[in-house]
Image (cartoon, rainbow, N blue to C red; front, side, top):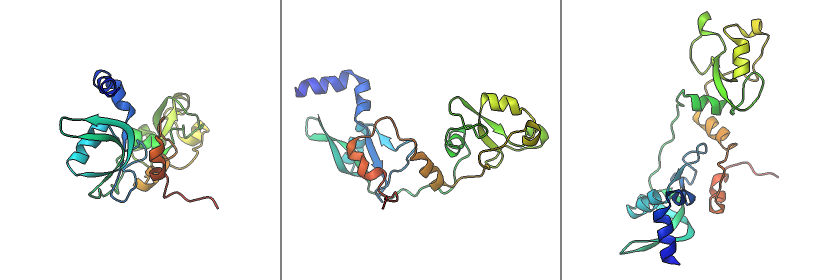
Length: 194
């Protein structure tokens, strides 16, 4: 049985993705929520061996080397605190995350692009305060017109988000798989219902 399991891991690289480790900062909060801070199990084992993390939860599966046997970590906490970034990079992904992956004109989800609220042809700049997520039909409808000329309005005014705001928005988009051992660490700082 153990030999079959080891061979299964070695011969099927896709199986390696089935045992990721949730990575927590030294304050026991995830480094990020979206994407969720996960390491492949090999990285978690390596970090534990190098004494960079403490293992606080494990899978039932075991990995072996000639000198040791170890349960695969499912939750690890960094020994050194990593200071979160205060400034958020202006990227397409972060813009879509700020806008919750919805068109800021009609609210639809799906294939998004971005739109300059004040068109570049009219002197609009590419910044947090002037760019929003937009679906292709709304982007084409607005074109290089102002909101008033296009008879369109925004769901919310665009602005630069803080890192904590993006982290909170990221909580709304959990990955497809959440291991039961992660649950106590993902939402422990959320407000509890009375």
